[in-house]
Length: 333
Image (cartoon, rainbow, N blue to C red; front, side, top):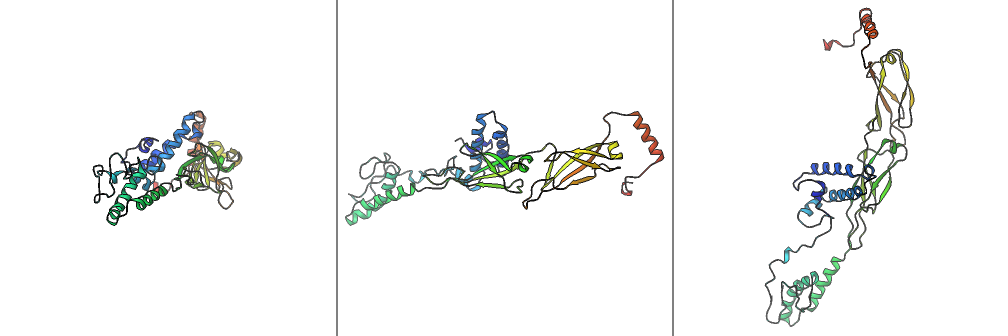
């Protein structure tokens, strides 16, 4: 996998806020819901999630910057502790165990890699005592190598995956599910908790990144984000709607078809309704955690004709002379 900083398009010195902002922009850009005709977007989406899993976590980012883990969060072998030993042959007296060689050969002469290097270290220091006491490398070296192999083979749990699911208000109210693509590339429908709020996280056990050496997979942590609606604004469990009406509807009153998430309803506008008046439709908001629903708050907006009207001008001039009225308090004087 590519360098996570490059994947997110941020500098290595970027702060947490810049990294989070870049992740959200890319996650939204490549989300499968927004790119159903682009098969490459799914892979890019998974790559962005993996990158944020590393540099979006303070501890993992520090480990990556120090070179302790790779771009997939896997531990990297640290070889710096062995530098500079290639020229040494013997640690003890004549007949003692041989030390490090650049060729990686051991005291037994067998070719070896990582295990053999550890065997040299543990066996070499054990050989010094063995030379003095008449014992060879044998037990100490073999036990050290076996222990190293046991440590290397130990299974470890995979990293958690931080994902984002963008859901519509209609999905929250009707299906109660959100679609999300897992690190494996598989797309699943996630059941949203009752009364879900924006920013709430849903945990999918064992759906994160795979473990090492046969260890269990991590979890997927899915952050719920609400899609912007063309009509409704969200405040808690309540929805807010601006309803435009005509001047004559405001003066004479009317019944106006008003949209809700469950279908349009007839809203009665009383006579002489002022612009800015808010009317409440009970239970037409979002589901709450206790099984109820929020409300829909409808704000009246009186709209004048798009073009000038001579008759309306004449009427308003006469009205101003016959029936003047005050709408601003003394604090406006």
